[in-house]
Image (cartoon, rainbow, N blue to C red):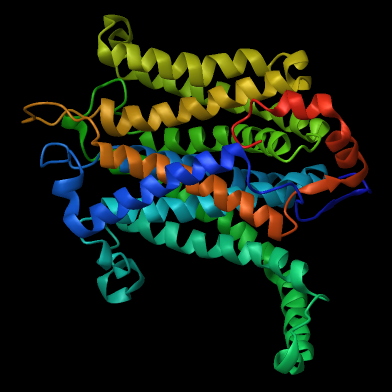
Length: 422
């Protein structure tokens, strides 16, 4: 981080054409969510006994968890491996991960038939150590708690030294400042423990999401079913962590009229093709070992879905990001990072929906309008909450001189006018 760059709340206007559109989409999503809660899964979804899960699991949960991996990969790189220059992107990555997991839980509640029993994994009397789903649930709950604890230093920093209750509450100013001071000192001493815990927990449940489908060998297409699914899920999550950080960082800089962290994003991008290449090699070797390589060339629906997943989400970013010129270009970085993000989302959709073949299925699954509305509503809400929190808390590092120059440049504002959350 440059000396003149400090995390600070963003001062750009909140309401824009983009945010108003997002508010409308979010409102429709809330209505659909409430309809599901009051009238049940049968009335609001196209799920049945043959297809017990749909886009709420494939997109809202499985994809959401994978795309929130930027939090633990960035934390591991900066804090565990002591790559100090990446500290500038830790806070945005942490916020993205925290909100990502929060909305994963909200999406999961919609998918659970008895959503009011979601607290059961927290009760030791109900633990089932042989259940993969239990391991996923308990790890997600603990990791979400860890993420909020990791975010606490940012909250303390925002309010420490600024407490000024008016009127009759004025007597609480000193007490509150004392509490914030104690919290600040304590968190500085113990935060590293939660960072390490977050990395470990993320690795556990990222892989366990793949383990969920290992128990269904007769119900999945050979292109995706493999005992290596836990490893592949973990590797793909690690591989998409940095692209997600790049994707979020460039969108945020466009949205708030901030100069992008070129040197940091270009540097972090060099790890992406290496990680994706490792994932690609293991994926191909697994297909060869299982004698499933021939399914790629049948050119049916499954084959085409596989080819799209691998070409868009793996090969394209590898080829792009091995090129130093692409890594130095913000547009090149954004396009390649977006492809990697989309690729992992396609992979989770393929594993949980496309590859799934119920033995007695009599039809196919397509999401209802309520399922679609809830999904896009949650995504819109996440963006709006992110935009709200970065205006309240010091999350994004701002070079005030460069920011003022960017805001004063009409060409820059015109150039950004095509972005959704400008």
